[in-house]
Each structure stands twice: as structure tokens, then as C-alpha cells.
Image 1 (cartoon, rainbow, N blue to C red):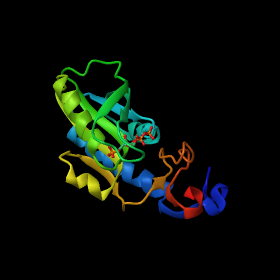
Image 2 (cartoon, protein in one colour; image 1 turned 90 degrees about the vertical axis):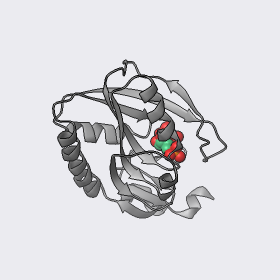
Image 3 (cartoon, rainbow, N blue to C red; image 1 turned 45 degrees about the vertical axis):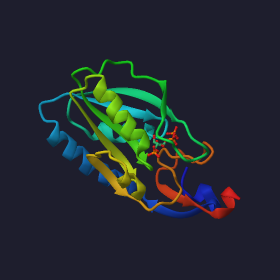
Image 4 (cartoon, helix red, strand yellow; image 1 turned 30 degrees about the vertical axis):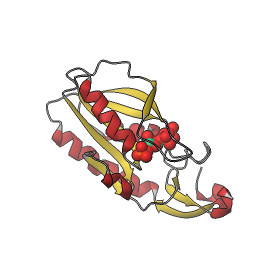
Length: 183
Ligand code: PRP
């Protein structure tokens, strides 16, 4: 899917596929440096993180394993409450592992704050976070994010894993939707 397939539904491209690729290359180099001599357990948070997990992992040279979690935040509509329910847990034991959580976006920061603490209580040797995008309000929550691709404005974005009503996840870029799509 590309911009032409979206027609008038696309308002603006915020992050092009090329810019995302370049930035992930930089993050991967940083991660390889920071984890030298260690094996990484990449933990992708379904479903939005599928694209960044696939792209970032293939740019890493460090030895790594991958696992997946699915979580759901209790809350009304689009607002997450910080209370998280595990829908699919990890298949691997994180005890003693160097975990790097991979996310598409951090919005309120509540999901990641909870997840980071949860994995540390399971005995992970370290738990860091890599996210393709971060919105400004995430800064208000006490969550330490080691690797951020792009700081983005507080707008509803789609593409590169992010959906609107389950659509647009397969857009190669990140963009905003025209108002008529919601109305
Ligand atoms: C998104 C994103 C994070 C979470 C971040 O997932 O992938 O997991 O929201 O929000 P927060 O910082 O406000 O806690 P979403 O719940 O939309 O599920 P999805 O990945 O399946 O689309």
C-alpha cells in the first residue's frame, strides 16, 4: 500500500519509509554498541510492533532471540488507564536475560511503564525499550526509553504498524488521516 492507494484519506506523510529506514539503521548501530558481548532477547509487543521488529532486528548484528507479547490496556476508547492485561505472554523465561522491548509507538507511556516493571520482577538482567515513535505526553510517565526513532506531535497517526480500525498497518510510511475518515 502506498500514498496513492489512500487517495484523499491521507492528510500528510509524517515519516517517510526512507527516513524510518535510515533512523532504524542508526538505532541498530547504537544497540549493537551498547549490547556488545551480550545476547539480546527482543520482545515485540503485538500487534503494532510487527513492522519495526522485522526491520530493526534485521539491521542488528548482535546475537538475539525474539519473543512476542500481546497486552491490552483497560480503559475507555483510545485512552489507556495503565492497568494492563496480558493476552499472550512470552514463551521464553526472561530470568537473567537482557530484554529489549520493541514498540511502534509510546503514547501515554503507561503500557511500557507497566511492562518494563513486570519483566524486571521476573528476574530479567536488564529491560530496555526501543520505540519507532514517541508522543510528547509519554514524557510525563516514569519510563526510561533508551532508543527513540522519532519524537512525533500528539496527532493520530497510522502506518508502519499503526492502525485506524485495523486498517493502514501495512503502509510503509507514517502519516495522518484526513478528518473525513473519522467523521
Ligand atoms: C499501542 C502501541 C503500544 C500502546 C502504547 O498499541 O503499540 O503498545 O498502544 O500506548 P500507551 O503509551 O498509551 O500505553 P495498541 O493498544 O493500539 O494495540 P495494537 O499494537 O494491537 O494496535
